[in-house]
Image (cartoon, rainbow, N blue to C red; front, top):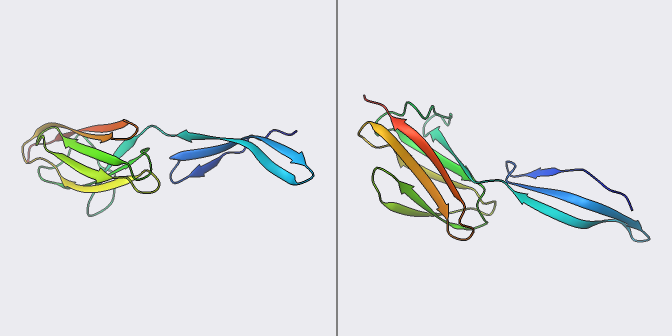
Amino acid sequence: MRSAAAAVGLTGLVAIAIPVSLMVGQSGVRPAGVVQVIAAPSATVLDCTTGTQLDLGSIRPGQCLQLAGVGFATGEAITFLDSIRGAATLIRADRHGNFSLRWRAARQPGPEVLTFSGAANRHTASCRLTVRAS
């Protein structure tokens, strides 16, 4: 029996498959076991027009943002909650456990917390941003 320490990154390092060992026999080499590691959920805030990552401490009032996240289950229902508006929005993760959502920052200056909570695995990702005075 031989061991292998090869790792394969999938879809932005959301999941990594690691062969635990390889069995060498008459039928050739086959994986004896695979461990799947799911990254902790996270969210990123991008500018809608440029696609560049934004400084979370200087968001413009009403600025259009592209919110993107990873680390959820395939097709998982995700509740998005904005701490200023208080309204919950339901979105769904894609087949890789990722999500993307366009959203406008609050019009009033101050801190704002965006929270994404998965229904199936109860994972949560959040980001804190500050809407600056205009």
